[in-house]
Amino acid sequence: MSSSEIRWLSTAESARRLGITPRTLYRFIDEGQLPAYRFGRVIRLKEDEVDAFIDACRIEPGTLEHLYPETLGDTSTNEESRR
Image (cartoon, rainbow, N blue to C red; front, side, top):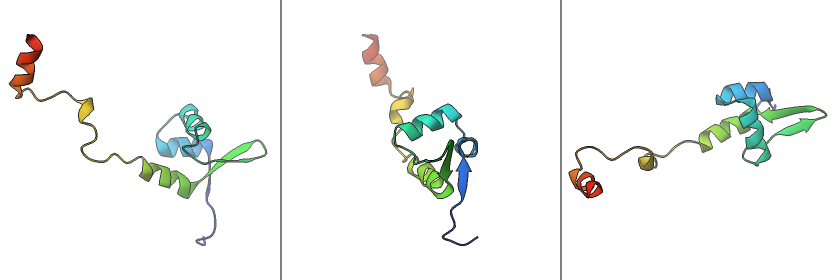
């Protein structure tokens, strides 16, 4: 396969590759987060664009602190919340 040759993925292949449902894939497409192409009644996605989307969704370290509670060792916060 040459470097200029496009590898097309179906919506089912793309959803499976991303580990999401087809419904979520269609939402990403509709919101403009993921480019897709319609050929008649068929929707296809470029493999390299799906891979780029995966890379763009990478979570940076230190950005999820709001999702887990503070450590139990921090007693000042626990004491204040009891008052």
